[in-house]
Length: 88
Image (cartoon, rainbow, N blue to C red; front, side, top):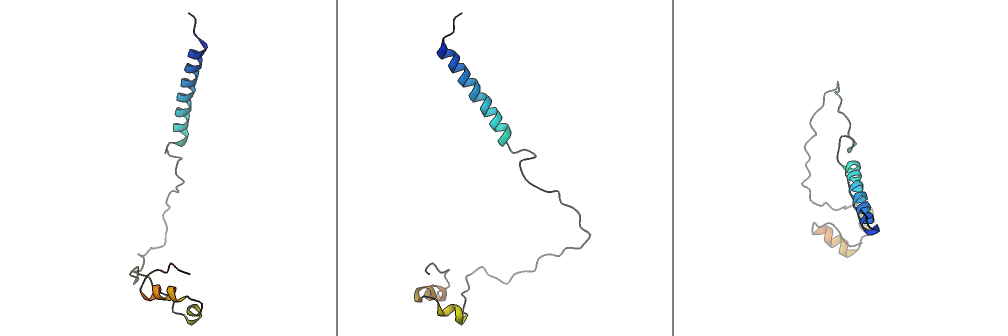
C-alpha cells in the first residue's frame, strides 16, 4: 500500500497533538505535588481564640492636624461623608 505524504503528515500531527495534550495534562494536573502545603505539627503551647474586633468595617478618616494640612477640600468632604477618598 502506498500512503501519501499528506496522510503521513496528518497522522504525525494528530499523534504529536495527543501526546502533547497527555503530557501537558500530566504536568499541570492538580496532584499531590501541585500545592505547596505543609503538614501541621502539634504545638505544646495553648492557643486562644483571637480577640473580637470592635471595628465595624467602615472607613475612619485620619483627623491628625498634620495630615489635614495637606488635604484637598474634595478629599476632606469624602472623608467627612464616611467614604473612602478617591481624590488626592
